[in-house]
Image (cartoon, rainbow over all chains, first blue to last red; front, top):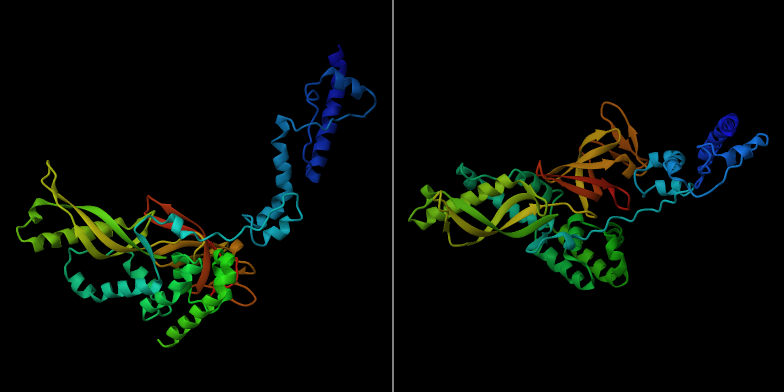
Length: 237
Length: 174
């Protein structure tokens, strides 16, 4: 009997709760939950709801059925932000700072080639690779005369890339100029990258190779000297 | 980045290529090695295989009992090309879509630069779509300097894919 009397109150209570869920969704609230007994229509809640239209809702810990809702509410809030950025970095960091989830600017990916390379593998500068591949290209007439000899499919595109924009005519000199930087903490991979990009200033090097910033103090002067030497070699080509 | 590697492979020579003349045998080994090298195309660790540079050592041959083939362990040096996360490279635009562009860099042509990673650039549709900013534009055949955000090796295709960005100073059209 009590249960049947309680029925209308149960329904009223349910609607009110749903409204308040909407409100909470708009506000992006966290930790909102129904009292555990409310949907089951327990006597306690029905007794409370008998007193006019006032419904007491306890803000307890997030209950399991509602947990899926909370990410949804958060998702709704963040949707306009997330559209602008798929990750954490760049412009979205400024937009997201106004929202509840603070997104920090992602650091540039670190260039740690030495950790990834297997042993017996050495980095080559583009000019060194160009010299070796061009030597093979020059003998291609002889090589291709024998139809049984096959050339890898990536050879031509690799050679074109190595020679792009002109290269240093003497790769040994380039390596001699840049090798002293190794004692200041520059790795071989980073050294090759500096040579490949034909950088013009030390600021450019620190911007493109952020991992060198930690050694900026002691590296700046020797780097400037090396870049000046490289510029001389390049201009004499 | 270009890599120079020292590798050790087993080269299998059929019995008909075995000759008392050692030079013919050496030629057969080199040809077979280059054949295997060209067929490989790429590996996850070393990237795209470009060329065999030197033949360092040919070990003792071992006869395979059932077939009569001879297996020679061969040490050689080669050049490969691989891109790494965090590396700064230059690529040429070969395809422009609404949400980004595809670049070619050496043997790699599946390098994706999303518009979300092109700060200050907006898409301009048309017969020849471009991405334009206040100071420069990115269109087909333009060389762009980018930083590699991530790369992936697809074993089934023996091919690499990469996602790159222009977030940083001195990056963008060259």
